[in-house]
Amino acid sequence: MHAVQIIYQMSNSDHAARAYLPTRHAAALLGASSQAAELNREQVNGVLGTALGCTLRLVADLSKIDAGYVNGESLAWRDAGVVCATLSFVAEGLGLRSNVLGFSGNAYLPLIGFPTNRFMAVGAVQISSSG
Image (cartoon, rainbow, N blue to C red; front, side, top):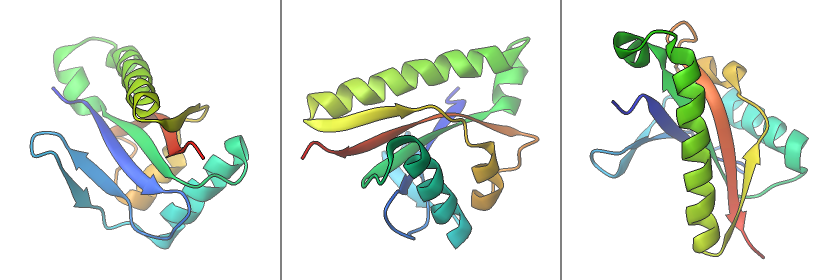
């Protein structure tokens, strides 16, 4: 179903966010405002302090989940937990630092063009170098 998408934003730059396209193993540039980069930086810094690296935000498409499940929101949170753990394991295995961030980030969604009546932010992981 691919109901949970990964959106990534560099936490130390004003570059636009990108969406990971799993079927093509590629990225799509999102038409995001500079406010998205600033909000990302503020939210990450609020949890970790100044943090360089890449923020991987998890965004659930509730319309996909609701098409197949009753009370799909709880499934989105469970899927997000599995994705956060997997991202962290892979990052650590590659010698990188990973931090699961304690925020969902719904205020970020409209800034990257995702309407909050369909999409829900369900977590984030910050990946940075280990040095």
